[in-house]
Image 1 (cartoon, rainbow, N blue to C red):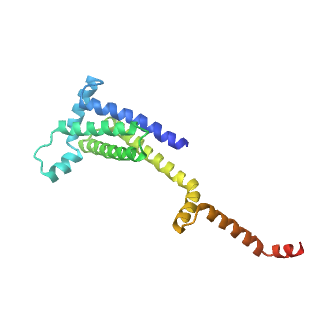
Image 2 (cartoon, one colour):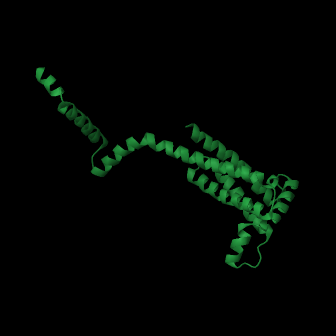
Image 3 (tube, rainbow, N blue to C red):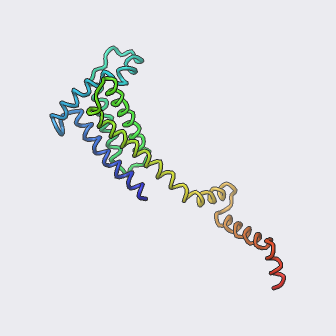
Amino acid sequence: MAAAKSVKMLSAILGLYFIIMGLNKLGPWFSAEMHKSLKTQHKELFRGSFFKLVVQQKLQVSEMLPSLYRQMMAFNEAFCGLLLLLVFLPLVFGNVANLLLLLQYFDYLFSNFYVGNKFDKSGSVAVFLILLVSRLVLVVLTRDSKPRGQGQSEGSSGRAQGSGQSRADLEGEEEEDEDDAEENAPGTSEEKKDK
């Protein structure tokens, strides 16, 4: 229960952050200075980007502009941030958004190393990679803890559906099996004869 609340809380915080960052990469909506800084940072990161090194060569695109790269990353961040922020949606949407953001931030980290940036410029990328991985770990831990408690009741209802019997019939059979086991146990039959 606490882990599920942690996932929702972390999703909401990450979602809000990624929405703000994505929108600020698209235009100076929150801070003109930050927008200008992000534009120059994306021009630099574009040189080592996965999209420039791999996608541009495979698709044989003559030129992929850094502004297009920045806009694609900004849209991905804002959209995935919105999916993370809407915690009432099924968990699958948040997980897909998390994976897309992980890919984007691995691209940022690779680009930082490719360009030769020091840790002061790539530190925030590493921090958010850790937070995204932590969210996925929490999701997996919550998913693993649910089936253990529900597995026994679902297992007996699954057997009932497969054999055409109702769950009550199965429980009745289990009680009869227990009674038969008590009757066949050594020492109990002698005690019953004495009675």
